[in-house]
Image (cartoon, rainbow, N blue to C red):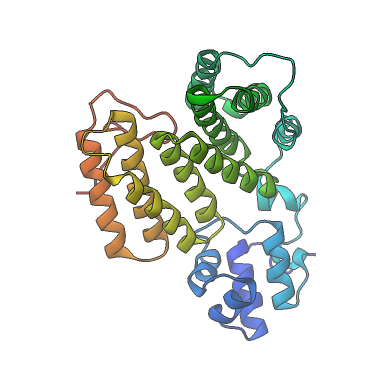
Length: 302
């Protein structure tokens, strides 16, 4: 029987850490995280760690993983979220490479149109994960084939589309038992964005990569990634198109949110104010589909 059936994961972790006589700083050092990260987990400010980190924590505290997660009918679902039926097909599409062959690549405008429709479904469909699960395998395959086949400017455009497709895949994979796949998708999206040389693709990939690091509790790296990208884009924002400007605003918001999660209040407000200024520069009707950043969605603090 579970000796602590009513405790949250964070409360359980605190109990076992204190029983072991370890401070938050000591436990954090043993698993490669900060004391602040341990505090955030114990107070349930962030989601429970993924399985690989659970194993490290359990070994550090000399307890079984089941003691940390409790007597649960499905440990994987509690820690990672439930597995969607389409996860296997999406995983297969990401793990396989569409090497250039005799088949001609799909025109980039067609891929772009399909991707735009997928983003609309992501925001509007009542069961968007099911819709994305059906669309992503072919989108990943066709975007990869285009990036491998086209040359010159078209190849760079194809890489930008591939980065965006992988960002959409990251949204499908989030909170499912596929941590290693989530990291692979985020890394590959950043590589594709860099290959494209497109500042909007770079901004979007940086926004997605920040999410992965922050959700893993690695706030320092999440902040470093975000600030590297915002710094690289800063000179382009004076007369930027609305989409790039909105992406830059979204990145500043991510910096604010990451700083707030790390308990850095002054720093959080500084980036929040910057994001607010960017939002006020956007056309009233503009909506950035990947990040949902817009004047309408932005609600500045009083």
